[in-house]
Length: 561
Image 1 (cartoon, one colour):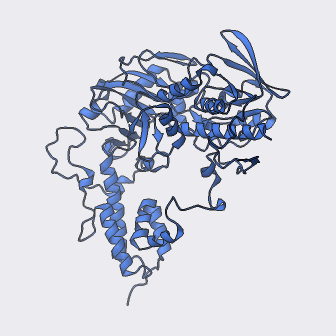
Image 2 (cartoon, rainbow, N blue to C red; image 1 turned 90 degrees about the vertical axis):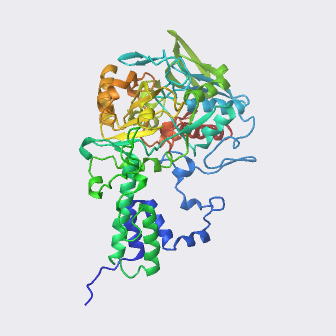
Image 3 (cartoon, one colour; image 1 turned 135 degrees about the horizontal axis):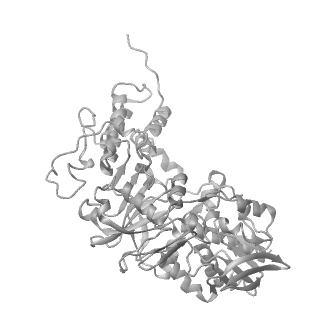
C-alpha cells in the first residue's frame, strides 16, 4: 500500500518557497512551472501598465508619509495639480508679487527656494549654521565638528579624495529628481558599490567569531535551500497537484539557482563561494574549492542574515551613485543657484502668524532681526523646531513635539587601503552584529595608497545612544576594538578617526525622521512644512526634494485659491 501523503497545491507550494527562501526564489519557481506566461496578458511592460488608483498604495505614488491622505487633483484655470507634484505642474509666474521665507538651508529648503524663484516668488532663506546643506555634509582635512559637548578637528591628509560623508552618502538609481538636479547643475557622479561579495559578514557567536567572506555565505545559503527544495520534490513530499513537468522545470531551476550536483541534486559546494585563502591576497590555492557549510551552521541567531538581503531593498539596489569629490558637491551646486537669497548664521527664535502673512524673528551675531513675508516654509528638524516660540495650531505643535528621530551616528578613519591591497575588497560594505554594525570601504580613487574607511554606521537605537554619549576618543577606541574582529590588522592600520553623532549636532539633534507625518503635511494658515522627515523616503535626499515639491504644491493651491 502507498503511504498517505499530504497533498500540497501549487499555491501552497509557492507560498512555502517564499517563506523559506524569499520572493526571488519563489518567482523563479513560478516561472519554472510555466505560470509566468500569464503575466503578459495583464500588461507586464512597465511602459504599458497603468494601475488603477485603487490598486496603488498612495504612499508609493505620492512619496508622502504613510499617514497622509490621498491628494486630489484641483483646477486653477488651465492648471491641474497631479499626484506626486513636481516642477512643470505649477503655473508660470504664479509667485509674482508674493514673498516666502524659508527656514533651513538643507536640501529641502534649497529645493523650495530654487523652484519658487523660477515661479517668480521673492524668496529668503534663513540658515542657522555657517554653510548650506544641512545634513548633506562632507568632512575634509581641517574641518571642525562641533557637538553639544565636544569638538573635533579632522586630521585627514589634505587631499581632494580623502573625505567623509557623515550624512547622506549614496544615491539610489531611482531617485530621479536628485539625479536630475545633478545633471542640471553639472555635478559629476560615480558608482557606489553597496553590495560586494568580497566584503565580510561577521557574528561574535557564529563560526567561532571569525568573519566570513560574503560570497561564501551567499553561495552556501542558496545551495542549501535549493537542495532542501530539490529533495522535497524528488521524495514526492509534494503532492500530485505538481505535475511531472512542473517538477522537472523546478528541479532544473533549483539546480541552476543553487549550483547543485547535476545527478543527485545535492549541494556539495560551489565555485561561486570562492577559493581557499581568498580573504587575503597571495593564495596559491585558487584551484581549491571551499568546503560547503551546512544550513544549520548558517542559521545561528546572531548571524546578520539581514545583510544578505540588504541590497534588495528598493532604495539599496544597484546601481547606486555618489558625487565625485564628496556629497556636498550637491549642496554647493544648489547654493550657487540661490546664494543671493541665503543668510547664514541666522538662528530662528520666533515664528509668528500675522495678518495676511508670517513674521520670523531671528538672531545673527547677537543682534535680533525680523522678516515678514506672505508665506513661510519651515524645514527645521522637529527636534529643534519644538523649542522655538511659535503660533502653530495645537495639532501641528503636538505632532512636532512627538516626532521621533533616528540617532544613527557615523565614524571614519584614514588608512592605507589594506582592504584593497591585502583583502581584494574594492568598495562595498561589511556587516557585523557588534555595535558598529557596518564598515564601508571607499568607492572613490580605487587603487590609491590611502583612503577613508567608515568604521561605524550604527542603526540600533540603544547602540547609537551609547556611542553618541561617549567622548570622541572613546568612540574611536571602541570602533577599533570591534573592527579588529573583522580585520585583524585594523588597530595598526587606521588613524585620524573622526565621528559625527547627529543627536548631538546643534540645529539638527537627530539623523533622520522615523515618525509618520500627518498633520505636518497640511498648512498651518500661511505656514508650510517640508523636510525628509515628511516624506515616504525619510533619510534620503530624494525624500527632502519630494517634501519640497509637496510644500510648493500646497502653497500654490493657497495662493490661487
